[in-house]
Length: 263
Image (cartoon, rainbow, N blue to C red; front, side, top):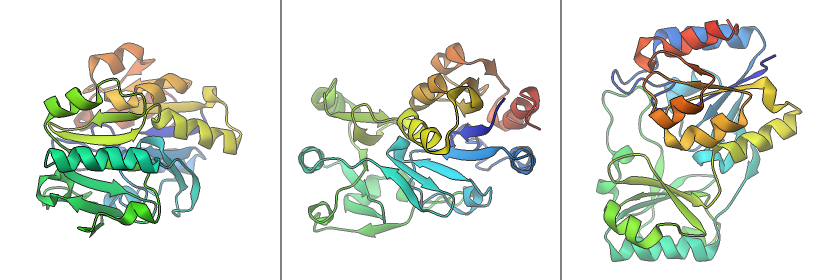
């Protein structure tokens, strides 16, 4: 019996073509919540940077910055995994050497270290109902000397990233755009945060249904008892899914929840 629903954001809850959360998706999730199912968002975003549209869905829990932070719907931190000072300094040095855009994600705010104009999610998103994350400029690049972050957003030449960090034993660069990467500790992913959450709540893997579309959803989908791939998902995600629904812009979430008997 499914007790928890876990959703990726971009390409899953959020229709990247129309720049919105489809009405059918909003209504289906509200109906599932009314029936008592636990609603979880799993994202590369911070728990404080979901934006009005995602907050309006009233998630019960959030797996933020690709699983490195677990928070409840009120923003209370249940678990977090910090990068080490040495790991932070390695990323800082790389970004300085290659004039890369760099933002660090801490538990309280995103801090922009350099080249904000290169960081796509900082730019005005007039068509988006999610919007950019809140941030603080930090040209001194010293916030990590006081407290450690959980993740970085790096915008750099993919060839340089591959050259320096390919198969790095400590750091993973999770690509989310042409030159954009979420940087987390090697082995950190949405499944890590999900496992911590279900352990705390006493929910079994078989009672979880997870929904995703991209490579950074793979581990989470493998952990869940029921894996749902969006119609717009990459082939690797579709291959491991128990059910492939329609695309996010074709009422995919509503169709999947109906198929699973959740609404």
